[in-house]
Length: 107
Image (cartoon, rainbow, N blue to C red; front, side, top):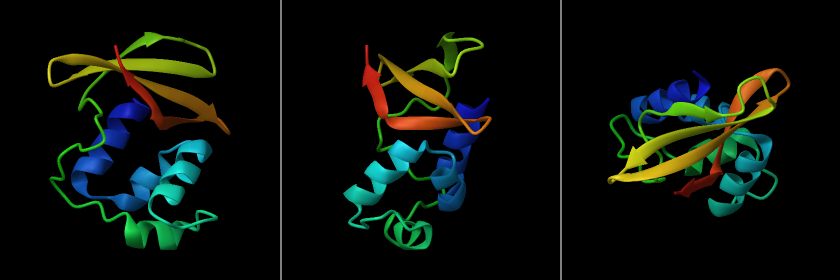
């Protein structure tokens, strides 16, 4: 599942795969948050240093299950962080599923 690949990339320290696993909107927001207007990939990755074993500081569950949207262009994955359910949006972009990390929320 795209979400689990995204989390695995985050845990493995693969900033490039994390970046490329985000929706364009999430990429733009991450670029803004790290101070790279325009979101140029290389510049964002230099500032967004993902390290192997990095704890999930983004309040994302390590694993999740699809709860909404089978077959749709938007899906919701739900998992737990600190004993709270979180919902994370996935959006189909050019035929591939991307994670909208800033569209995640506690339930």
